[in-house]
Image (cartoon, rainbow, N blue to C red; front, side, top):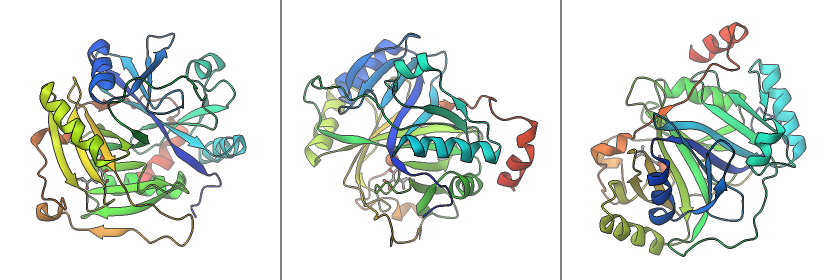
Length: 322
Ligand SMILES: CC(C)C(=O)/C=C/C(C(=O)O)=C(/O)C(=O)O
Ligand SMILES: [Fe+2]
């Protein structure tokens, strides 16, 4: 159980800024294997691996980076409780206007956005995303679902503590002296839906996104596809000691990291194990001794904005940073 009185259903989606939408579109569909859903009114493009309207949003921008993570809650009541929970905390949640919800496939859901105050990372909450019955494109990969996003931050421990204390997350594993922490939005069973990792810039930075795939064939085929198309490989094929998943990280045209992950540990709703304190020694970094390449630090910033963070939050932010 967490201290939050709302329940998560799944890690929903990630929105990214990209500098060349056409090139990243070709990467997302032709290399990574996602299906293009369509374009929104501001030129943003939606991509999916299954029936839900989208799991990735790509927005054209001057600089690459993370815009927000979307979280599906179990019911509309959960969305309402979450909204009041964050408002009571002083976090200033903002409702997503109806026109924007319609573009996001959320016409019959309430939806709001809120920034965690330690770093300004934006989360969106909703409960009902449109299902599309039309078939997926192609057969490059058999996906299970969108899995997680990783963000680099200056203070992993403080950042984690805020999510555990206030945002309904549980820690699954802690690497080193809070070098990285992998968290799950309770009661979602996947080992993690969100991770904090070291930042390469001193400021919040995008690290990677990941989708769960169905079989080792999907990982092997991606490995050969990236070689054929001269796409960069940042880490893998390997196996994470933390979630136990088989992984392969590749770089998109902006150098941002997209991971395939296979077979991660599943947690029960209650009676789960506590977080483990994992060794951060390089020789413990991968069960198959895969070595991260220099590109594994990632690329891209985090759009932190300042909406919702004002003087009323100074005390909360100061506490969270202490
Ligand atoms: C090498 C990194 C820090 C690491 O430990 C990654 C772990 C996992 C996992 O356990 O699945 C990730 O998904 C990840 O951060 O990509
Ligand atoms: Fe990952």
